[in-house]
Image 1 (cartoon, rainbow, N blue to C red):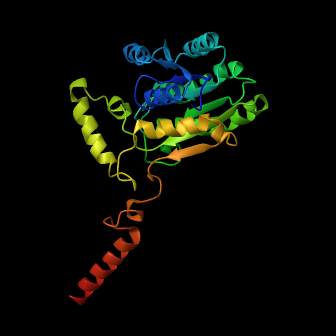
Image 2 (image 1 turned 90 degrees about the vertical axis):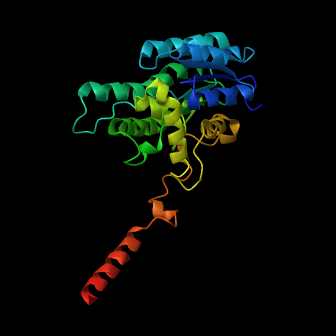
Length: 285
């Protein structure tokens, strides 16, 4: 019961990583305020919790909603100890030479500004509270190209840097700020980002789950609980000497090219040797 007596706020709480984090924190004693635009999902989560979880509707693209969320959670809970700024989606998928200004702004608002405002409006309610901790969801997309659409990757890189500078701003108040970088996690973000029709979502999720089992050295797809466990660690006293940094939870996805961990995949050197052998064979013929 690492979080007994603690008050936590989680955004994007009705499904996926957010839901897993809510259940993890509440399961270890926290009073959790679960925020989402999915009212049905959020209410169902709260209804099954025997009062340990309360739902508050919040659209994180609206700063006043975030302010109201933090104020209400602090009012009901007597303050805030833990914040998990998690809500996001894939954003605009256009490449940099095609994206519109509106598409860019929408993605930054949803993925980056929402985290900034989550920190902004939670911090006043966290100052001076022992063990106060903020965790932000970044992504492997923040660490390199090729993992996501461009605008999303840039926004998540912003989340990483925001985590660092916010940690310095808030250190004087005893508030730690860290981020987590998930890899290929089986959640609704993929079917939502790809605008998969409702009737096809189950089939699409099955395909994604099968693909993700072969996407990295750990031979299974990442699960929301994998991220929730890491979030709980960063929010706990066990991580009290960590701030301004990030935790990579990706099953090894970012290790390198597939040949680095898959003996069946040819590496660049192997390909060059094969080309040399082919050239020699052609010359001999």
